[in-house]
Image (cartoon, rainbow, N blue to C red; front, side, top):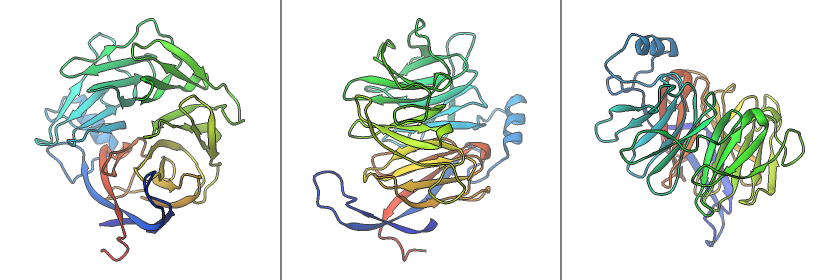
Length: 327
């Protein structure tokens, strides 16, 4: 099932080092995941919350806001409704809840990213903490002396072994080492390039560049690994290519930039220069439709995972080439 509004072209869409050209791409809907017992069914957020409060035996997603996908298809999902990091087994399609080891738990898990090896880092915007999980270990606070102001988006730079964290309430980005020590800070409140107004979701591409959703400036800023501004695009508006409530961000292997817009209930796609290419999704509960979506993740095979937050599910798509004639 192809979705969106026509295929889109990108000049020079090949990876660095390969010859460029103009190719057509489209987005195909693959599957959705909500709970092991109701695959293919989308329950409302109210039904999810009620079931969770009543202690349903079957673990289900409630309010997913951010996610990761491993090479094996395993999913890690930050779920604010369940107050947990969810772990989804691709073989059994069962969901397990990973909670913090201390009594305060996870009141508002906000962002999740891979670290080195099998490390997972998770931010909690209410506790102002970063948690670390590895292998069979429980979630533990990374550095209990670290002071953060509403940490939300989080991304890992494998080249420098740095953890980037959006401090939304402080309008800046914290750059941490793997032990959770602050190395330096990027940005301050403002509208100029390199300044932020409630930054939220982050993404780091294969070259180490940092993509920042500068939410209340209604734009995306792309930074170098050193924190220098490379480009800025976006503005407030209700037409294609503009933003109303920009949320998650990710890039595919060809350099397309995907930005979720919660208020538009869609995912917009841009080229490296910030030119609008296409969008997919609309408000609804059917396949390829969204209700206030949030996080997005794209793996090395260009599989696209979207946290369809108020439909309490994850939807999965595939970027395909030259598919304009397929049904």
